[in-house]
Image (cartoon, rainbow, N blue to C red; front, side):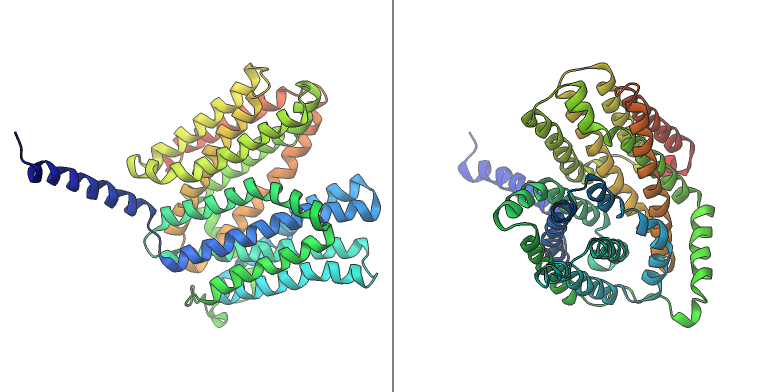
Length: 417
């Protein structure tokens, strides 16, 4: 029989081994963890704004067209100013850009309740402020992605997964929080909370050292030349171009189906509010799951294998929605796709940070976003047209586009990752 000391030693070693593995999976630099905490608060504030502004517009106009157009205006600035934003991120120090973006966004959001209190608020103010906020949010987001390598050094996959997780938590909890707050204090007063929320990221970024100095203006030439350089780099790099093409096709197919999801749940499946809400909750939970599983998966499988497998699982998810009329299947399908999409986004963000020269990263990311965001409203329009004939057909289109993404992964440099 082994004595007590002999029995305890292997148990203790096993415990420390497990503890070490867990800490290696969860460790991130303290300054980045603080930034993520601030980012979560800011993202929740963004959700308050996203719900409050349509609420306010409806109170002012009683128009569904105005309400929906305020959502649509968030895509237009990316198309018009995305390349310019990329040049700014590559040209100037990222930390300063992020601080300026936070301050100006806080002022713009606070301007809405101020104008209301002064009885000066008009509809064009909401359009103008929403447009400016979309540009500044794009600036902050692109600067953040380019700054992550400076915040975290060699922990890119974990850092990007944590970044995606914060966004998914905000997407999941934000609508519930927004509904509670707006019901309690009203749409206009809710905006004060959003304005204050920018202070969380401002303070976190303020504590950071320099996050990439950018390229000297004297070496950048004119802004149009800078934009052309970014576009040429993206077009000539087969790996990053393939990733952008995947995202563009994927966004088109996803929004063909997502744009009519509510209509499909209510008019075709005849679901009540509780059943509809549960379907949407599965979508949010799927995205959160994707941000959790991607790091351990990436440790076990090559990215060149993992990316097509994730896309194939997404194809199966949409196919399931074609085959089964069960009321919970749309939520399961979209939840599955969301899991794979968020994991894909995390992998691709890491690949771009590793392969794109730092001096070009802002422009490459911005041009890629222009292409991929353009596909979203186009997909929504196509989804609306198809649903007039057969709502289930939108899932066919979505599944086919996922299949095309798999083909791109297997026939491009992505397979060598």
